[in-house]
Image 1 (cartoon, one colour):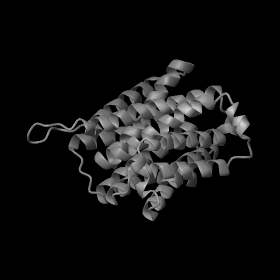
Image 2 (image 1 turned 90 degrees about the horizontal axis):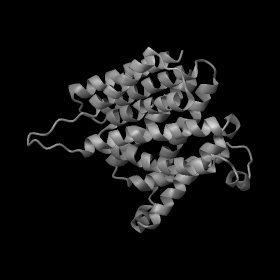
Image 3 (image 1 turned 135 degrees about the horizontal axis):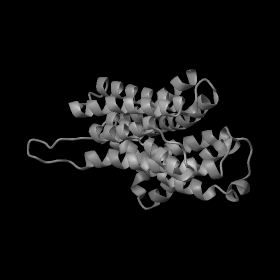
Image 4 (image 1 turned 90 degrees about the vertical axis):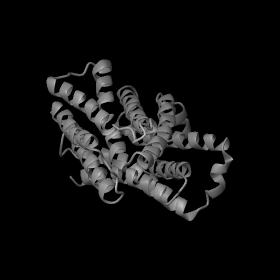
Length: 290
């Protein structure tokens, strides 16, 4: 149970740190670069000795490159959405994306689908729609970015999770999980550095102590969210679906509480209904595989 609690705290910490980056006016992209430096170091540190040639000649290298590029794009979207839209809605959008890899697994690997799972998927789709809903201001204007950010996050996270499932089904077993994750983090870092070459202004404040402290903290919780989840799954206390369900409910609930109490995020009644429905949907999807 301790691994589940730590997973919940670590993943929630990602959304909170993005909000802190905004409050302290710390450059978002710079912090993400540092985050992947730290996450890559942790990943390879925990990996048993493996040669570079083994990684280069691996069957999963192409997948790790694609996922790594998507990782940094989506991590930037998570940061932007947390700052512009809020922790609560961003968390719901990212956690509800679990329905997309479920649909992919049903289609690609002929997984069983029951009535509970169908209701869970429908509830999740409705929950995302309600949680990201924004009404026009008094002048009738609607900022589409506030809706598009979490929706892009929802779709993007779903695609990445589906790609990870595909990689693990075809190429990556348990013995390769850590080195695969570390390689993905490394390509995310490399993608960020290549992008930085075309925007040299990014490096102006790169030696800031505040930037490195927050970036390193982000890297630790980012790596921890994956590593601790693996620990929770391998603990054998609960089935995999139950582990994911409990963790996601905890992350959504804790993020909403922190966003409301500490960052004074304002949610409409429709948004609140969407968040409650998201927790219900996660519960349905959890018991669907028991």
